[in-house]
Image (cartoon, rainbow, N blue to C red):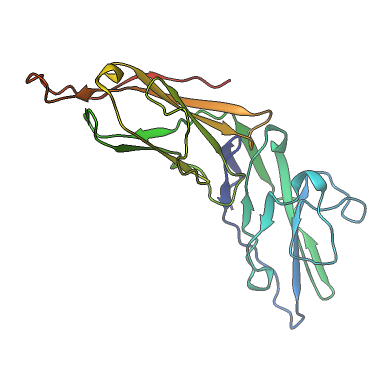
Amino acid sequence: MPAAVTVQEGLCITILCTFHHPPTPSSPAHGYWFEEGSQINEVQPVATNDPMREVQEEFRGRFHLIGDPLKNNCTLRITDARKEDSRNYFFRIERGQERFSYVNYQLALKVTDLTEKPVIYSPETLEEGQLVTLVCLAPWICREGTPLTFSWTGAAVPSLQLSPNFSYFSGLSFVPKLQDHGSNLTCGMTFPGASGRALLERTIQLNVTCECGGRDAWSLEQTADGGET
C-alpha cells in the first residue's frame, strides 16, 4: 500500500492494499478502515465488509472496502472524494480471535482542487443545413460516482434540447446555419460530487461551411477553457 495518495476533489481512486497476518482457520474475516486516532470500540469505521458494523455517515456510499480480508487484501475504493477526507487512515483485521490494527502503516489521503475539464468532440467543419451531433465527454469521471449534469449554451443550441445525457457524457444534435459560423458553443458540467457544486466548462468556436459561393472550409479551434466556479 502506498504511504500517501492524492486525488482531485469529486473524483475516485482505488488504493491497492495487502497485509500480512498469520493464517487461521477462522472464517469469515472482517476488515475495517478507521480514521487516525480512532478508538475502535467507540468510533464507527469509514469502510468495512462487516455487516454488523455501521460506517460513519459522511463516508457511507463513498468509501468501500473492495478487497477480501480473507485473502489478505485490504484494497480501498473511494468515490466522490471531498476536501475534508484529507487525513490519515489505518486498517484493522478481525478473524476469529485474531485482531490487529495496522496503526504503524497508515494511509495519508490528500484531496486537491478539481482541475479537470470536459472535452468536446466535433467535426472540424460543420456543413450548413446538415444535422450534426457533438459530444461533451468527461473521460476522467468514475462511472459509479455521483452523476454529472450537463448543459449546452450558445447561439446554435436549439431552444428545445432533447439531447441524450448520460453519467459521463452528453450529446447535442442540431442543424447549423451559416450565421452560426464563428459563434461560441459551451459545454457546462455541474459536478455535485465536489464541495458545493463545481461548474466546469469547455468552449469551442463553430466553423460552418456552405456550398454557396465556393467559400473555403474553416478549421475548428478551441478558443477558451471555462473556469471553475
